[in-house]
Length: 283
Image (tube, rainbow, N blue to C red; front, side, top):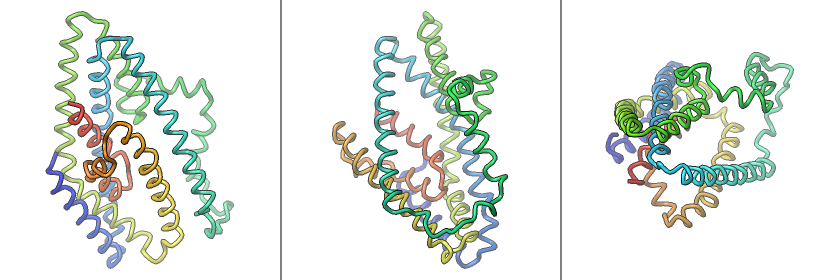
């Protein structure tokens, strides 16, 4: 990956330039949307294989299935507890700030097509459909569906199969490890375009919606960032304190990824970089 300090400065300058261009030249700013979309698509293209190789290598390297079971149980408990705390914080903040007040929208005037995909998903979220959707139609289909649960499913199965194999399993594990290095290398090339993506995304956002017209949306965004800040300082801060890691040192460590999220409005752009840094830290 590019030098942390260089990438940090480049993305920061790109975000500032995008705001200026979008404010002064709105039409040109709106035309920059493909830059942000292209960067996000490039990142999404690499997320599935990176997650697959990382999960397979992590699980198969344990070797001991009992240890794997204990780690998996702890992971599920951690996920459920932290997710519940995040939901509680979000509900408290949204009920206190009520960021939706003042929009005065008439739901009958909204385009029904916008919500069709969400309604379709909502109608198919019973338990049977949920578990069936985790199983991909084919092994490679998990990488093209865009559903990370499917990628995790086949990654777990592959890791278990490698663990149960004799010496051949180690050879396969070595291939997966080298494949992971390859995909991280490709991601390193893609990340170099982060400033361009951040510039395009910010230019389109400001050019398309303007600065003066974002009062209510700004309140909504501030509510979101307030919620995120409380979660980071309280929940994540407590977790890091128990782990013996200073909170602000950790935030400084991932400052590049935080800027990518800010500039592109997508958390997926930060996932590969976070995983790379966690792997390096773990070693």
